[in-house]
Each structure stands twice: as C-alpha cells, then as structure tokens.
Image (cartoon, rainbow, N blue to C red; front, side, top):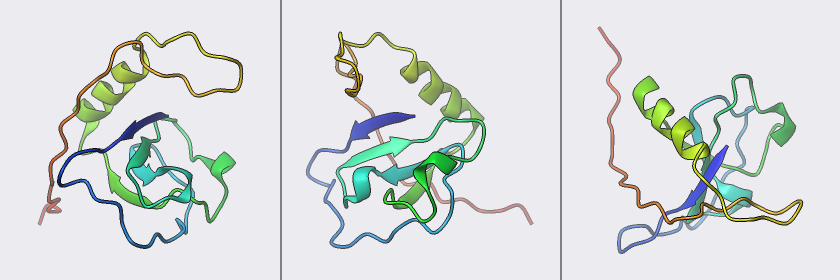
Length: 109
C-alpha cells in the first residue's frame, strides 16, 4: 500500500464520504482514514484487503488505470524511506511529485 496527499488549487476535500461497501482490491484508490481527503492510498496487495474490514473507512474513489501504472506504483513502494520509529508510517526520503488526471474508462463493445 502506498499513501499520498493531493494538494493544489484543484484538490479539494469532499464534503461527505461513504464507507466502502466492499473489501478493497488491488489497484483501488481510497481516501485514507475515512476522511474526505486530501490523503489517499493505493492498495498494492495481490489478494483482497480483508484486514481493512467490510465496510471500511477508506472510501474507494478511483482505480489505477492499467498494469503499467500499477508497475509504477509498485516501484514507488520500493523507494528509499526515512528512518522510521516502530509502528509509524514510512515516509519517502525524497519528496515525489505526482500528476493526476481524469481517465474515462470505456468498456470494449
């Protein structure tokens, strides 16, 4: 799992969140900690994230576009992190800027 924060003029928190009604699956993106943003996370596991519970607080709002993008997310998860106390979140040693864009999925006919 990798976590990030959307910041900028267009990244506004939602006014309301809905608990995710299903177990999170690989490549799904959710708001972290039941908040309406701007912190988000991408689930990288191979199986369902049953440890989050059903329903869970991380409202699912997006999914990673394709396997190439999942590989990028996996590589981000392998970057060097700062020294971290036990039980604390691991933060990247160097900041990483990301671009996010709207992707409209059109199923094949």
